[in-house]
Amino acid sequence: MKLKYLHTMVRVKDLDASLRFWKLLGLEETRRIENERGRFTLVFLAPPGQPECPVELTYNWDGDEGLPSDSRHFGHLAYGVEDIYATCDHLARNGVTINRPPRDGHMAFVRSPDNVSVEILQMGDALAPAEPWKSMENTGHW
Figure (cartoon, rainbow, N blue to C red):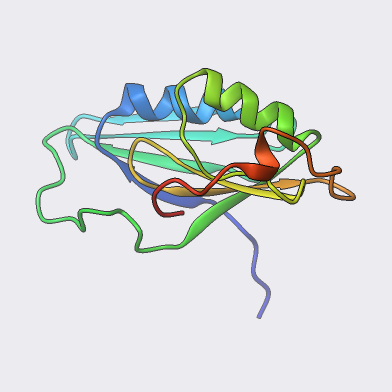
């Protein structure tokens, strides 16, 4: 049996806030579906030049009563970056909490407005540990 990765779906409660977060992370909108009959919007985002690696944001127009409150029923998404310190600094300057700082120059975790855990990994070798990251404590859960 042959498998092909299609996408990861995440339910969102505030589409605008979620789009802002994912775009700050560097993803671009590749496709959008507005379904009047089903009363939902699907927005697909992917890293530039990688449309085959999308995350699908599902927004239900009438809300999501009854869904798990922490939105943690799938694990996390992971993205590689060229400079983990610059990426975390960019996110932090735009109001994103760095839940697990990149103390090791290799790995960090943040959360989307919908509580989705996002792992950020340094591509290639880890960067040398540097302040303010190496002495920064974890914040919340990741």
